[in-house]
Image 1 (cartoon, rainbow, N blue to C red):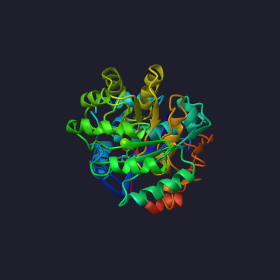
Image 2: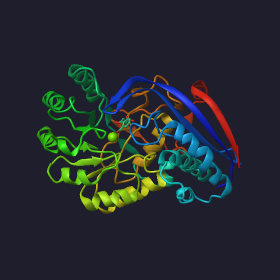
Image 3: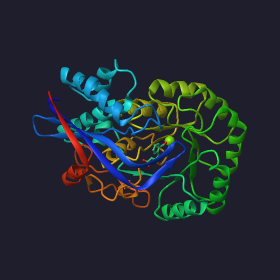
Length: 369
Ligand code: OSB
Ligand code: MG
């Protein structure tokens, strides 16, 4: 694939609105944009999705930098690549750190598609020309504010509404929301806020006709989730607990969930994401693509992945304007009536807005190959 140079670019962007979950509130986002450049002048882009604090999973912006600079980039410098699928094999000796791995692999996938002059969706084998998306709404100060925000997003046409819940912001809120929106597709995401002592409480979720409950129990658990799933009708969807095809198979065999949220960063890249997709296709497990409040680069990768056929449920890839005053891609991602048209130009299919990229860049490091 003749990579000549790799750029690591540290960005800082402010979310339009603070995003609150059971684990905390995110407003300022720092992250990396990776850029793989070949001898022909093609540029492939990736994004690291770790947050500044290890609240969601263990990785952080700082660990991403350490692992990319000290371990992963040297591996890429020492090895010739023929296909992006080789990247995850080369990275295998490095344990964990999936978001760091995915950030580099993503740039290489984009570069590969651009070298072949095909879209990233096509390079992955995706056939959908448009994808359906929902929106994830954070915890608000009052239920009335939440209902107002849901109304706006239902009106905007988002295909399903995901609400963040935590102890104290759960059953009563869901009750009021369900009464207000009797027919809307609604799901709840707890980001690991409950424990096995709450299992009898969580059975109350069955009253609200939710599409699913996402990651109610610990980030590293699949055993208690299986226990919970056996006592509730609401399908459990695993997010934090799934890092690989192996985790997916084990969760399926144990009955820990009925739905899988695939996040490219959490599973170590597009190659592993595709393997998980293929397993779920074979076993009839619905999947959808999760989000990490990404800039347009990460968003474009999510869109390409979602073109695979087993992404049968709307994902969290809302339009750029839901997150940013100004995104770093051109055109920005637009969800019209909850539908995103998949770009068919080569690679991620969106141009990088160089001025916006420079505006948000704190520093750049260049690695020669
Ligand atoms: O659990 O899916 C999650 C945001 C930050 C961290 C974790 C999660 C989320 C979201 C929003 O739900 C996803 C998005 O809109 O990008
Ligand atoms: Mg989640």
